Length: 226
Image 1 (cartoon, helix red, strand yellow):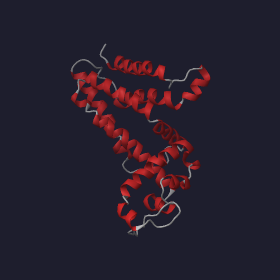
Image 2 (cartoon, one colour):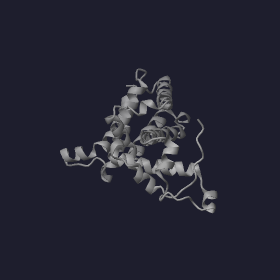
Image 3 (cartoon, one colour):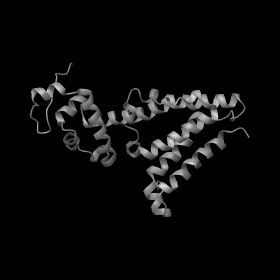
Image 4 (cartoon, helix red, strand yellow):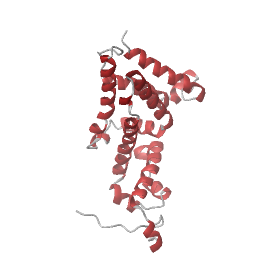
């Protein structure tokens, strides 16, 4: 059934003046809602996040949020789809297929490290979704196909490296992706418990360069032909 158009409103529920309505941009509103919802869900989780708080911070209404996303769970799923889409898009923009295999692998690992280090909301959202046993992310129709790109990228690097006699020919690309993302993810997601256990914060700026070099070196040593 076609949805009826929704009049633009401010957070108190009153309709916007005619001039403001002419300037109203639905796509910009959706982007703003998703940005704020990402922060809310990553901080509070699905159960703790409040749609009222998201609406207030985006100068919109619950009614408009439900118009766009149908429910709180629908908004949460849209956030998950966006954050995974963002990292996959940026990975493709690296154009590592144009680089020598070893340089391409280095560039990909450095990007993965930097992305996790900078986008901690992304890390928290993945951790939260794992608490839900991936219940919501598996409902996204394009989720699996969207994530094929990173496996194809790694597979291409490995194949080209093996053809040149530089990389081992027996490495599974999904296993390698797991190796790379595990280190980059863990140092952010587990920094508090790791710090409590060992008195060292993995995300501390003075350790960042060392850890970045360490994961790059570990991956390159692993993939190189002995």
